[in-house]
Length: 344
Image (cartoon, rainbow, N blue to C red; front, side, top):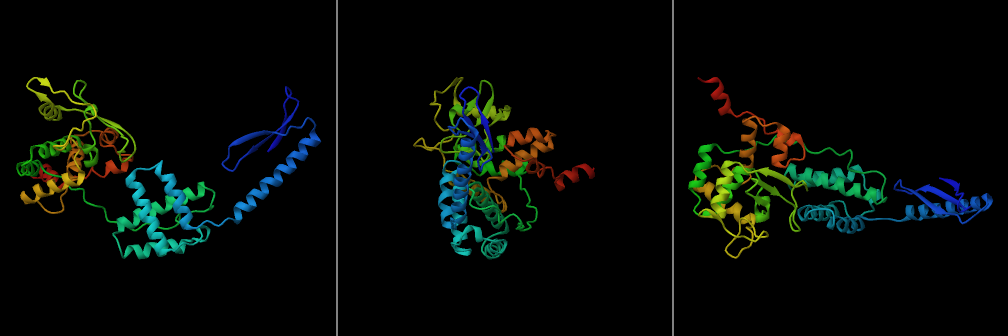
C-alpha cells in the first residue's frame, strides 16, 4: 500500500492490494500530502472494520451448501452437481449443521468412518475428494483459512482389473445382438474407445467422412468427462461402419447436422441406460461372466492401442484421458500374451 502523486492531475492516489491479491487504485482527491495521509488513515480504519465484521460472521454448512451449489450451477457438469448435493446431504447428516470454521479433522474422520460402513471404499474416496473441493471453495470465499480435509487419508483400494474382450468374445457378443442399431452402436464403441455417454451425444455435424475425422464435442446438455473436446481419426473399420450407416447406394443421405448419429424411432438420442441394458442382455445370451459391462468395450480398444505400440501421449489424446497414469494402467500384459511369448 502506497501513495503516489500524479503529475498531470496534481492529486494523490492510493495503490493497495485487495484480499484476492489484485492491485487496485483509488483517488484520495487530495493535492497535498497531509490530506492524502489523512485519507490513508481513514481508509485503513474502514478496511479494519470490514475485516472485523467479516471475522465475526458465522457461516454454517447449510450456508456453504447454498453458495457452493450456486457456484456449481455455472461451473460444473450436472453429474458433478449431483455428487455435490449428495455429499452435502451426508455431511449435514453425519457432521450436523455446524459452523464451518469449527469443522475439524476429527469431524471428517467421523464422516469417513460412518460412510465406510455404508458404501464402497471407492465411493468414500469420492466423498472425501468432493468435501476437499467444497472446503477449497470456502477458502476462496474467504470463509475459512484451512481445509479440514487436507490431512485426511483416503481409503486404500486394491488395483481394479480392467476387463477387456478377446476378439472371439467380441464376435460372440455381436452374434447375440438382434437389434441392428444396437449392433452398430457396439461396433462404434469398439472401434473408437469412446465412452457410452459420448456416443449417445454424437451428432451428424461431429462426423466428417471427407476428412475422416470424428469430433467429441461439448454440447449445451453434455460435457465430456474432462471438459475438453477431442478429435479421433476415422480408420478403415470405422469408415466402413459409418459409410454403411450414412450412405444409400453410392450417395450420402441428407441429414440435419443437429440430428443424433444413434437415435430411436422418434429421432431422440439413445438413453445410455437403455444401451447398457441391451448390451448386458447380449452378454448374458453369450454366456459371458456378469463382471463384464459396456465400458469393457472402451478398455478393449485402449488395450489394443497399447498392444500395437501407440505412444502413451497419443493414446491419452485418443481416449480423452486427463492424466497419463490413467493410460499407463492399461499397459499390463495379459496371461495370453505371456503364453504366446513363452510357449512355442
